[in-house]
Length: 120
Image (spheres, rainbow, N blue to C red):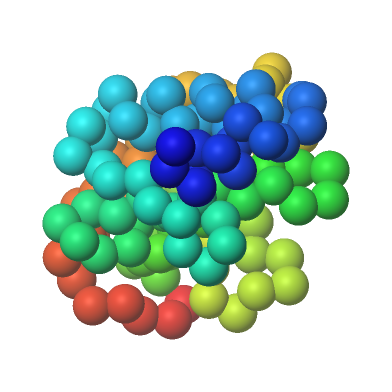
C-alpha cells in the first residue's frame, strides 16, 4: 500500500473520515493528480510538480496549496496561521467541508500548476 494511503487509513477519527473525503474529492475532480508520500504527509502532484498536501495535526486537517501565492478568489476562507508561505483550508469535522468552496479552490489552484513556486 502507498505510504500516503496508509497515513490516511492510520489516522484516528474524525480525521480519517475527513482525509478520505478530501482524497475522494481531489481524485474525482483532478483524476491526473498523483498521491505520493512527501515531507512525511500525503502530497498530491500534478504533472510531476507539488500541488497540495493533506496534513492532520492537532485537532484539524489542513489542505495546503503549493501555489497559494497565486490564489486570489477564496483567500478569505484560507488559513496561513504560523506559516510564511502556504495557505490552507482547515477542517475539524466532515460537516465543515464546504464542497463548493473546496472544488473552487482546487480548480483555481490547478490553473497555476505550471507556474514556478512563489512565496506569498
